[in-house]
Length: 364
Image (cartoon, rainbow, N blue to C red; front, side, top):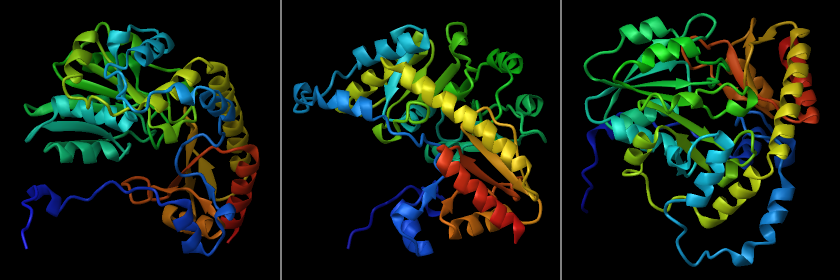
């Protein structure tokens, strides 16, 4: 039998840990699928049925027998209008993860380094390693803010990129704009993941015209509630976007996702209402958690929060909640988050069940 000569790094490479399906979780805990409530994916709990109905009225006119416009010109124009930038400053991708891959591929190669402010979204490290690079981790400060001084002092001859997330997943804090400008004066790519931008309105988008080394990635998975659509994008100077376009796949975003994204971008009222309801629920839940002994929430500028337990580990809390059909994100294996779990804000009814479950978990 012939064997494939794989890249050597795969022998010790630990892949990104995917979220299990609801069906798998239900089977594991011996419950029905309808008894499981997901708080672990940071997605919107609300389905925009109106957008799907609008899509259904034009389905027959979508030429799925042909490739879509490889430049995505119409969608780029709509995204540019939404982001208040030029269409030449927009790159469309199959989810923000593809936008990250394209951006990383332009900068990171064998032997290069990327600096991460940790803890953060773990897929960044996987992408760097897949591309042959090495991650330099810089621990966040006690309040989870970026340690810009240490990030600056960690830059070496092989450093090609600094990766930041704002609001950061899983801690929910923002990048300091003044300190960001300091980093942008260096000849290093600065990537900021703004996947949760809509929940806080804080963005560095206005800086892309002044700094060719700034790349911002965003998604329609979160505030727009379109995680199943797989539609993301990158914002950067027209010069940088033209370089990224040399790398991106030509037809990774299908015609139907493009049409649904267009519908969503022309109905921002729904998204804004969804965001407002989520923020209001987050504040209500945060106040309720403050009254539960044994657990506390951390401030967050996004649709998710970290919870810290005083008497048990995050892993123990995750397991106890899972037994009750409540699925949160276990982040306890991350250095510094041993006592934590992360959860995303759901509907009012879902959040009430989470609160009841937290009372049970903390009273044991």
